[in-house]
Image (cartoon, rainbow, N blue to C red; front, side):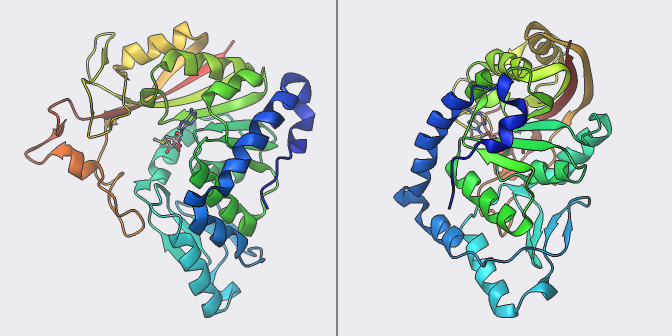
Length: 322
Ligand SMILES: C[S@@+](CC[C@H](N)C(=O)[O-])C[C@H]1O[C@@H](n2cnc3c(N)ncnc32)[C@H](O)[C@@H]1O
């Protein structure tokens, strides 16, 4: 089913420690077969062996197959499979007529970055923290040479595997890798997406340095982070939770984030968006029955989190490796 086969990296193998990666991935891919993933694994192994005729990645929803391509019974089976991957955090997806309304309206993010991104045709792209691959499919619309999605979370790999089995996009690959593993990639990517990552980790600068290392000279990073509105060069460092999340560390102001990029080696730094996150972009849905942004902001003052901190803004940058 899921194999460790890195042949798709052969064109850039002189810049990648392939042997090391193979060893790492052999171990990590074995963990996919853990008991905890049982229902998702069953969905993957029982997946109908069909390939979508109609695909569209240009509109807001990633469309893979239309309802008319399959019998109603098969659609029910696919719906049940897709439900095993709940909660769907990123989307929307339309799979053979089944509309997955995910917690995040990821198309809003994509539409903010798309006008600022280099042309992706024939390029090598990395989507760091790719989740279920929503942005990888969006990138596929531009015919890139390769999109490598990295995410160490196993259930997202299974979800991506399920989706791409129908889509059969041969230039999209997702591996159980994290920012730490970018150290094995030197001058490889033309464009790297680093969105929703740096504030979740203790060392945001190390993440950015690893991104810089993995980009080709002239390559572009698209960075998106949670932020605060201060004009000073500071970060909010929450005592414990922030918007109920236990895994939030440094939340930078725009200038602090610019400084992080600069001190990680990036040049040509441009802020392309900075505004408060809206409940229309992140919310509870039938496919993500989870507490969401609306539950984590003060009901009397949506500009404050339930802990009393400033509510999150989202700040986006583009920058380059010289
Ligand atoms: C907030 S989500 C962001 C997803 C997506 N990039 C977006 O912007 O919508 C963070 C993602 O980072 C992934 N992640 C966790 N640890 C990571 C690591 N060490 N390196 C890269 N990604 C990681 C999580 O599994 C999750 O999919």
